[in-house]
Image 1 (cartoon, rainbow, N blue to C red):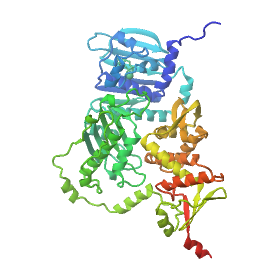
Image 2 (image 1 turned 60 degrees about the vertical axis):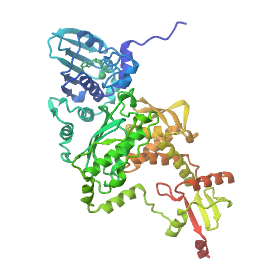
Image 3 (image 1 turned 90 degrees about the horizontal axis):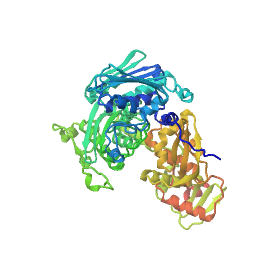
Image 4 (image 1 turned 180 degrees about the vertical axis):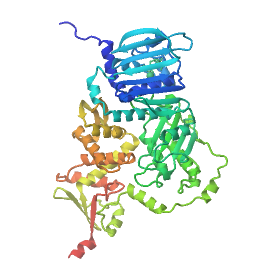
Length: 602
Ligand code: ADP
Ligand code: MG
């Protein structure tokens, strides 16, 4: 029999790679504009037709390419930005993989015209399906003009996956905004179907933010507070919105080394600083810029991923939290801020290189007098009410709270030591104690125990995980897929290992060890639906929701017979839980029938 393995032709290999890098017109825009920025452009024009389907053009006045480089640029792994692996840790450019142009030209008709300052003539190339169709020397301005036409002309499945023009244009604009918000020194123009929809002159960062969002109902002018802090580990600067301008559609942006990122953990630091200042469901706007040495973040990130891993997340959390509180306090917008306790910072030690972390240096306004601010600090009317509302939200009051005396008794830990335990109806554990009879809901008791274990694992990032011998493929509806994408960090932290498998499917490679023999797909689907069903679920609550959702799924069911040993084990572990009365969703775990209650009945 003849050998059967052969190398794929470049055009096919590039098309496969394109599936990952270029998912929609917006990813193409991102790659092209980032190349223009890397080329030092001062003015970048984006021109699209039919939301990028028929034309996506990026014209820049950057350094251009030589005719040879222009041809090379479309080869896979062709890059001028790194030469060896160690360069990855010094990375200051947006691109480095040398994949983008190769991917784009595999799935579109590309026309490029480019010239360097030192060359008299430029080159014009036409490429389709990775093949150079024509090339000629031309007169053209310095810089690069890249026209991508008929995206996915040879990949019908991709074309079908695209949304309406309206949605794709929105995706393009989102990507454009993420770029313009970090490059105020560059002039940008965005033209869609011959209409200029954005014209941004060079300006300061603050002006750029105000111009980009100036049209929205709550313009930021005058409502952004500076935030700035610098430590040896990281520099954080930018702007945060005053609490009173928080709303349901706030703009929240974080960038690291000029790259947009999503970071739920740092978002939480911010929300913690604002806690008690916001109406329920409202969240503040923020524009935060992190500058960190490239070796302290994982640079080898996938081009379409916005999650970024930091080596010192906990230290950065504390720095960000302190800086935000400082900023809110400095502008007298944080009535609850206590200057005496906030003036020192509690920064966890960096484990790998302790000596390189020093306390943050706050950039303080020299005219700022904290004591003056403290004296003139006003409590806004309705403050108490606001505050109460927000605590209520964090600790929901169950509708079926037991009466007050039982509450008092049960605030103390459960006093069940050597009393005999009885299972009744395969549902409840009855424990006779000196104060009365304790009735325990077995499923909820176990849920409570598992919830605490899972939450601790999530928070310490030490989930016990169990690899699957055969990965399970989880196919999702678009809605479920979108929710799953949002929940990914939490799911990973609880012990799942997931990998995108297709535009609407994930491969489940590992599951939390506690899940046992339960179906991983069902477990994830239930979590997705739980988050979707919870009105106004905020990302800060996802960890708790996922821990609780999983615990509910894994806990022993009602109706299961338990041995004396199992009951004792469960009761002992419940006794160690911080709350043995109620689950975080308010459901009752255990009730006490006191002597008095029982006597009254006779
Ligand atoms: P990467 O950006 O990862 O290096 P790309 O495929 O995006 O890979 O680009 C390949 C190379 O083509 C770049 O390294 C750069 O040298 C060159 N190039 C691409 N776009 C431009 C541009 N607009 N101006 C100048 N050079 C460019
Ligand atoms: Mg690039």
